[in-house]
Picture 1 (tube, rainbow, N blue to C red):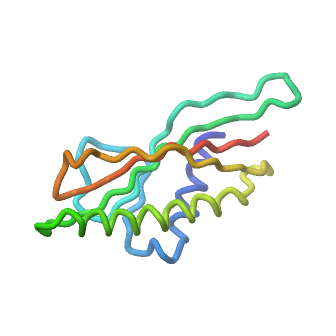
Picture 2: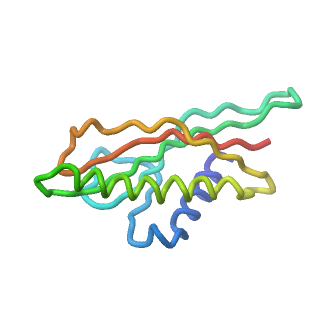
Length: 133
């Protein structure tokens, strides 16, 4: 069901008014985005066991990318922070979604910066755990 969960998450982000005009894609290629982009890639999956308390855990990595060629890096950070805020709020809202009659729960994990290695693009990657029984 991981594919259905990721597809539902993309649809949720696509339908978030604050993300209108943002490129949202599943799967990454080797290019660093040069415009406002959200990339979802599949992470590890931990399937439910026969234990009654067991749940399915799917990790999805959410990359947020912004582009800013201004001399002051603060401008790029400001744009990235705004995008991250909108995306994380939307993902928290996704936790109230049902997919194939399964109630989803979402837990945001740690966000890692890109280390300014791709200027003038700036980005981050957040691990998100999606659970269902």
